Each structure stands twice: as C-alpha cells, then as structure tokens.
Image (cartoon, rainbow, N blue to C red; front, top):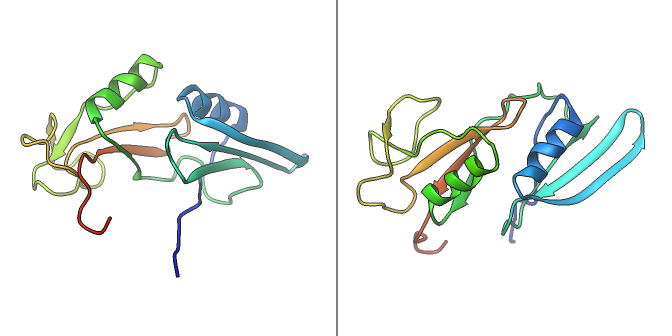
Length: 147
C-alpha cells in the first residue's frame, strides 16, 4: 500500500502573520477557511511540492514555534537561499555537516559552505518562520536508487 505525506501541521501564534510569511515565500494559498471564532484553517503549498502545510486557529495544540527540522528539497541550495533572502527572509549561510552525512540538531557540527563535492543530500541552509518553526533546505541533485 502506498503511503504519501499529504499535510504537515505547523503551530503558529498569529495566523495572519504566518499567512503573509508563507505566501510571501511564493507558496500557493490553497485554502483559508473559517467556521467560527475558534477554528480557521490556512493551507499553503511550496512550489513543486505534493505535500501542503496547514496552520490556523484550533488546528494544533502544539506550542507555536516548536517544530524543528522540516526539510524542503531543492536542486540548488545556494540559489534557493538567495531567492528567500531576496524576499526578505533571514536564511543561514549554506553549510554541510562535519561528519559528511546529515546535519545535526541546532548548529553543532556545521561547516561553512556547501559540501566540497556537492554530493546530493549533503548541503543545507536553514530559516525560521516568524514563530520560530525551523525549515531546512537540503540540496538533492541526484536521488538515491529507488527514490
């Protein structure tokens, strides 16, 4: 049976501020539905993604800004970083992990610049939404077999 990740719920404190931020990234606004004072759902989708992001009022009991390590795959991490910086978003410098595989939590083990060989899966940049939910660009130019 196929299983596909369809939606990621991101907890936010200010729904309109989050909506402005994510649509300001160039993400498509799929829905903005209110069914009362205590329930509003916003759905946005990153360009090229099959998975959407939902936030709103009454959507999550999780603390706003508590989500870490949401990954957005890009073909060119340097270009993706520059695009968001051009949209006014604070984005980390491009980095790779000292161990050469996957990045660690927070900033531990980060080495400035992309992976020296520009291997797929090994170069990153990170940014946060206004609440502090963390997103990571991961450069993938060639998928692993079977992916």
